[in-house]
Length: 319
Image (cartoon, rainbow, N blue to C red):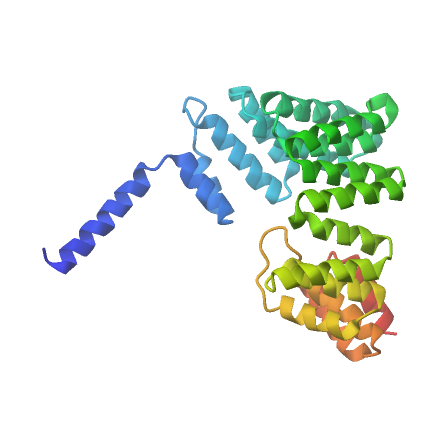
């Protein structure tokens, strides 16, 4: 067969397969690639009569949430649940959205949303006992809500204990967080140590605890040990820089690590380049290099204008 015709045939087959791919699978792939406008274009026309309606509303809700359009997101998730109330993630994200709306709402609206978010997370857990996101959110609810709305430290501990049975390291981390809420640092440390013992990939959580307690030597040791095991552990590389910036210790090492981190492309939920520039600015400031610190603070704020510490730092070095 002529190579041109073979190539054309392959293109046609690929296009046909793409068209045959269910809309939801296409939307999921587009969403994971961050192509939010394409997701909206693809799923917006899906009607209530179509089989994929519930899933379509769910992904439109995820898009709206990412775009910080939380009222729209809650509408989409509610519609998804109305169409199919047997999917745990639909309930979990409805609870997440209610919780986010409540953060900036007045006391009256918070009172209305509180039972709704709690119920949404409970529904998610009832549908999927292994849904750790919903259990973690429920812990935060119990810790933050007043008693008359169901807030309870003991209930938070009960949920953390449930997570220990499902995923021990994460459960110990959550239990440690509950003890930190109680300002019981001794018990929190035991939980974080157990967390790192059960799963060494959680060691950064223990190191962060020590950083928060200003036990910087212990934090540096843990991060450096992690790097010896994996020299490409960029989270530990960043954390060494951050710990240096906060403590004023090992400034040259901190600067070296942050510069290396800035050559790396962070994945979702990893520290941003804006944050790395801010920490590097803090190191330069501590070294007395105000001009360099000023440039780095400005760079950080151009990337992310919400960084409070960067704004405060820029104000200091601009005097």
